[in-house]
Length: 554
Image (cartoon, rainbow, N blue to C red):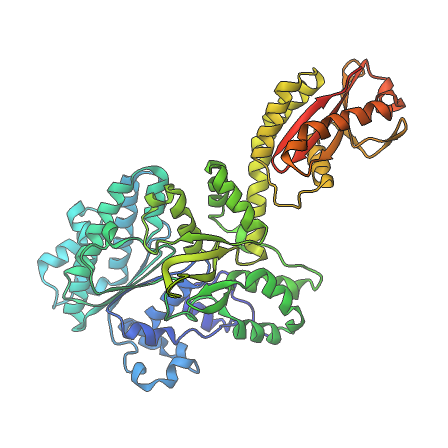
């Protein structure tokens, strides 16, 4: 049984180690027809592996590795195979360009250029490359090139490669948008966009030595941002048709994978957790998580599905959105967690700065895999599709867990200080202030469970986990809902009776009923309470995200 290639992004390593490989070589035939193209997919969906595959197929320096494609689908296309190992290729990745300062980013890119020269040292002594260009190449090699030369570096190197090999160059750039994300997060957007615009414009727009340029990334950055003037630049996001099967796993591929590893009886679990992405109109599974699941299942048959994708970098963006969102957005996120859809206008092209706009946040979440298109939206009168308007849902249980944990982390952080205030206000009998605090906590809480009394009971118990809490214990002539015991017998014990109001106007009446119940059933007279110097009771009634607190009367 072949080993599972978790984390392998080099095509040659994949094939040489005889790892389990789901054949994506038909992607090559799509690339053949492109001059300049950008393919955007969520992270961990096979972009780097596909770019590595393109390198080994096209590179004139990899003829000895032509065997890597033996038996793969692309070899059935004799016309496409004529292109194998026919071009000089520049293959770079920008995934490590995550510096917090712009000057460091420029140094990082200069180092990438240096490595291109080290991979193509034949250019330094080539009889076809003139001395002036060789001097520039050596400047790249020894990191002494000026910024204008760095901006023109890919164009210069592609020109030299064409001179040496007599063939135009293919340029492959993986994770092109990583530096833009770092720039956005560290507040040097304009400088980074200008720097990349200069590089891309030189190598893609005004370069007669380029056969084709292929880029991958997570986001389809707007042309106005860094691709100005590239009118023949095709972009393929998850919303576009073509190349739908080239990234991620289709359902047939997942079934075959599970069959090969004798796990087909677990298909329903895999589908529930890792299916749900829609590329064009094709259902796609998360390849990273699917492979992780199979790997763990073979090691331990009792292991269960987990949110593997959540353990890779980047998911903190959901927490940040929840933390910074307004009430409307929190309500929309809660609808998503309930399994409901939200209707949004999607911008297929963005800049990272656009993420600050609440409406564009949903575009970002869709294009990066945190949401899925459920339905297109049609005009009621004409019955025609309304462009860029979609009904969106969470794609699967794995991503649901990311939202759920993000909400829980936010709520724990937000309530850390507020619940201490609430406790002291209740202990001191300051009802008005306690009302304000608890209503604020509710406003920022998760309310995606059914609106029933036992939920609010559990909610109150959860708020005071730092204290000794007793719940549903016999006391007096009945069972109280929640008792919060102080740390010393000199402090005040608190008893809470929870009520759920059916209508907003019933809040006051129902909370008073709760307070009355505490007195009538003598909860404050129980043995559990009498050892404390004081005890106070509260009836608290809830209606959705509002509440009313009534203190018991002596």
